[in-house]
Length: 155
Image (cartoon, rainbow, N blue to C red; front, side):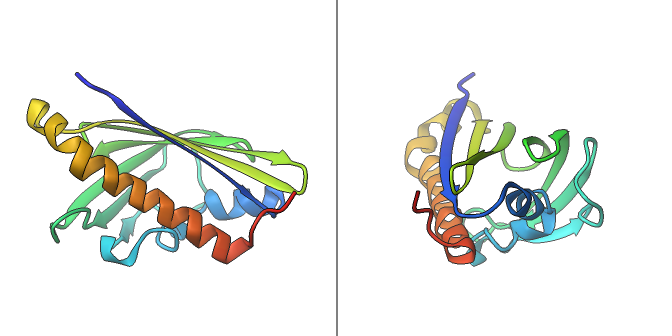
C-alpha cells in the first residue's frame, strides 16, 4: 500500500482572523477550486466548522466524470488547524491537514495531504502522470487565487 504526500505552503498579507474566517468556511472551497472541477456543495456547509461535520460535494476531477465526495472535519483548533478526511470519494485514503500561523506581516498557510489512490497497482501506475499532476494543478490554482483575493506577501 503506497501512501503519497502533497505538501504546500503559502504566505498571505492578512491577519490570522481573516485567514481563519476564509479557510474554515466550507463555502469558500468553491472559490479556490478550478471551475472545470464542477465543484458543488450538496450539504453540510450551513454552519461554522466543527469536529464531526460531514460535508458532501460533487466534483468532476477527471474526464468529465462527476463524483460524489464526502468529507468529515475530524479535528478543529480555532485559528490553528483543522483536518478533513474523505469518507467517500475518489481516493482510497484522503487525510488533509490545514495549518495557519501568524508570521511577520501576515500568515503562513500549510497544507499536508496524505492520500492513497484506488485500484491498487493500476492506480500507482497512473499516479505520476494523472493523479499527482492534477493535484499539483489544483493546489497551484489555489495559490494563485488566494494571491488574487488577498494580495502578495512582501515581508
